Length: 322
Ligand code: AVI
Image 1 (cartoon, rainbow, N blue to C red):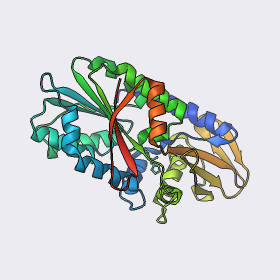
Image 2: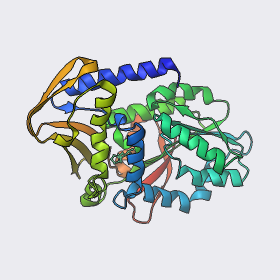
Image 3: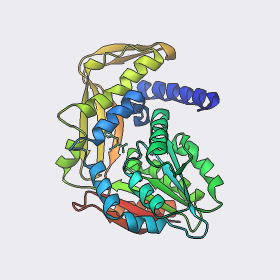
């Protein structure tokens, strides 16, 4: 990442932390979970039996590899496969393998907010799939969208897996989808994962595992603020709390102060105090149904062409077009 982009990112981090922790109720953005330790914890989450999302999406991509791959194919000019929030690329590799094995003419462009994840993925692909052309980028979704407009020389397939859209409230999700649509031409596709509404207990368990990995992931945001902004959060005095509202399909994560305390954030020149049981809202993980996805797509000027689901119907990948 160039120095200018990094400085801008640091400034945004500071501004958003200050704003969130000075508000009532307090909040922080889940995008700040992902430093080196957060990336590792998220990998561990994806491997947990309770976190069904990864397994379900893997099943979808493994079962329908050929159908999906052929939807992507452009025999004349080839395509650019752009993945937002690529992470470790484990699921995408199923498609990449099909595409390379079947002589697709394409470039894979993984984009992720985590510099660490992008580096690991690029190195891993160079080893595992040496014939694949990879052109990786580090960046936040909204930041990179502008750059996607430059990819209009041939068909583009934008992939967003993992129900990453679920970390955005509906208005932001519509904004995101609209911006994606604005980068698309008629032949382009958007392939996007949306975790579905299901037994509320199954959702709660996915975000509240007994081993405490999700709790550590949630609390890592405070450790990061301590390290990067010179703060003195006593992380052990916060507890992870998850709620799920089956009516709205919204899972919410909180950090709850178990006792009253004062915290100083040196780099922000900010003192914040917590009452006992005061909360910091850190993440939403939205769950969907067809009706809601259709509505979101319509609002953004997109239409659903088809969708794929797993055996249990827990999760769906939708193919969207402008
Ligand atoms: C990345 N994102 C879609 C995950 C989710 O399910 O909301 C992040 C996560 N948070 C807790 N567990 C996993």
